[in-house]
Amino acid sequence: MSKVCTTAQALSSTISYPLKHVIHSPHKKPQPVFRPQGERLLKAKSMTIAAGVRCVDGIVICADTEHTEGEGKYEKLKIFGHDDWLLVSGSGWSDYIRMAFDKLYERFLQNRAKNQRDARQAVEEVILSIYQENIASVFKVGEIGSPEISLIVGVRCLDGDVALIKTAHTSVTLSYAYEAVGIGSNVFNYWAKYFFKFQKSMEITAFFSVFILQEVKSAVPGCGGGTVVSYMPSDLSAPRSYTNFFPGGDPLAGFPQSAVNVLLDASALLNLQSSLAIFQNTAEGLKGLIKSHLEMRERAKLVFEEENRATPTPSLASTPPKKRKP
Image (cartoon, rainbow, N blue to C red; front, side):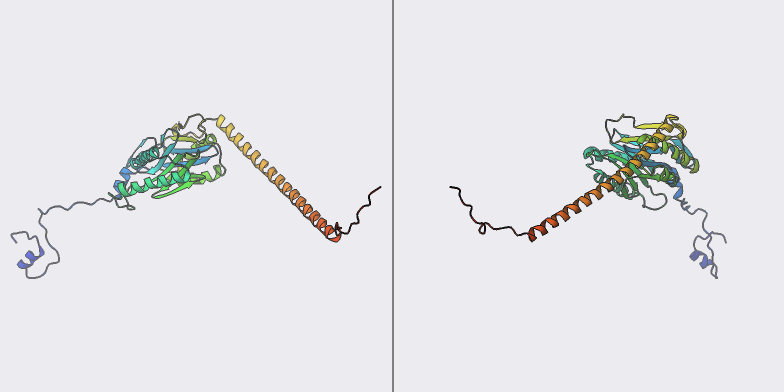
């Protein structure tokens, strides 16, 4: 055969019997090679741990500093804040997290949140706009390689309260205890159920958060670097020391003063619990005294009414007139 046949029809016209295979021309246009989308995900998505905890005097938000992209990693801050009324951290694609902070800043700059519910609704609007306008317009949401973000947001409201908000994809919820997002969230939640069973001061919460993040970074690949702790105090007159950085996440940061504060906080909590027990016992005793007093008054009232019914009151007509003295 002097020529190379490029199609089955041309080949069958030359040979009388059918062929199962076709010989393709070596000059045929090469087909593109499709790579799995997972590679793109590794290049763009940063694994992390970010958490927020409500305290008796405000909110604490903490995060590690290690970014992992593909086969490389570097350290960079993951908590963004403005003045004393906005803190944002999260997990997922770092560029989208920063864009979410910019959009939230612009949203609250135009119209500050009146209360916690208003803050949650504003965060939900921003998250939905990011997924609809910036993600779904380019990617297919939910597939491997599609950007995703989960946020921890702290917002100061106009009524003086502070709101702790968590987002996961397009769900947005208020939190009244603690929340964590990222690849290390399970380990954080495991330790948090012991340390944050009761709300503590921001200083004590920050100390425990540094310890927990150190455990997360030791146990979870993709979490590492230093630890950043940011504060949002409820009282605006509090000292404006909002962010602390601990290289390597030293769990003994601030020792021994931090240990002393932990003990004082624990003793204060025990005193508060005992005081509450005494108050409850006193309240129960007062409740019993008031109940018995009301019962005595009711019985006295019934006795008085029965006596009045038994003794008729004399009328003025039956009373004889008094004689006047001469």
